[in-house]
Image (tube, rainbow, N blue to C red; front, side, top):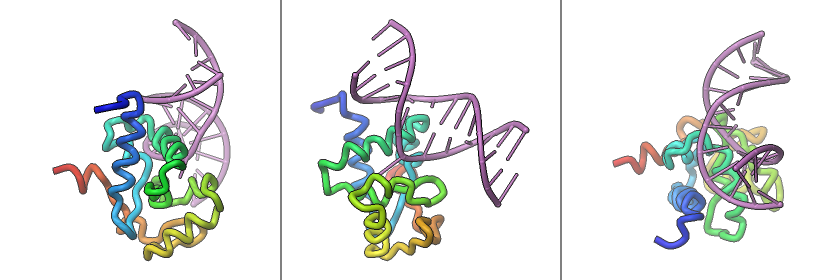
Length: 112
DNA sequence: TGGCTGACTTTCG
DNA sequence: ACGAAAGCCAGCC
């Protein structure tokens, strides 16, 4: 396929786009699914580059604790929480409630 | 080539 | 339970 130099970003985008509505995942989960657990930070960085692609629900990607660590990178810090709430995700103090239930692991859902 | 950065994760104190 | 440090990989200068 084209552009193998952005393969990593492409995979990240693909996985994030596959995140069902009302679900959230973690950077580490995506990185683990891609086989690069160590580059969990890169996943977030990839999201940063995803700004040119509004189809990517970056607000559904949170850290391992369910905290909206990336909200600071959005247009507005509150937008991420608002978007999650619009999808039915309860967010309190920048933290996703019932994170264990809301958690969507690509390696578990897509690993068939 | 070498070194720095990063929306993370895990472990030690 | 909280705080700090190390580890990890990919991209950019």
